[in-house]
Length: 190
Length: 86
Image (cartoon, rainbow over all chains, first blue to last red):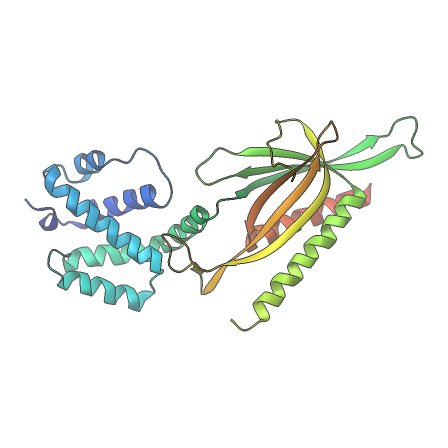
């Protein structure tokens, strides 16, 4: 039985999910054989391979262009008319899948294109530090901030920083400059 | 040029400086259009300068999306508010 004829929407939806996990979200261990045996066990491997490649290609094209509803319909319709393309049932499944997973996939694409570390988390506490005998002040509050940073697909690293009140205020001032810059950017014509 | 390096867990560093850049990413390999909700992808790139226990200054850089940055800003305001009460 050909993969193209096998449609109930469940296997294809499962396949698209797995492809998204593999291609965009960096989930390891998703192999062609795993997908075939789990989702399309009656389809021989030599038939499944091009089918998988076709679906992956379609998903990548849609994601790369960030297709809106109109573009998506036009694109999928064209795919149904192609030689060796997709069926209209398959087009419907793909369309539904993209609409519900679009945002997450786009976010993953952004993350993949960021080669720097990203900020994964921030935790903090404030200590009332007792100063040494040489200081005039006895209690100086100190903020301890732990930043969790990580590159796409890599483990987090942690940066633990100490700030006194002066430095916290210095940062706040800098952050408001950034905020102002962002506002200016928004208000400028594109 | 100071090298960016990892600091071991539990080793506290002293914050020295914070440099920033607001960027717009338009397109990339594998993603013809980096628009998110109609906007080119905006990000805030940060370079922190920190001094470790030996006094050596190192840099650490990272990026935030605009919502992440706004959250970052909010957290610092919370911290400032707490410090002020002490």
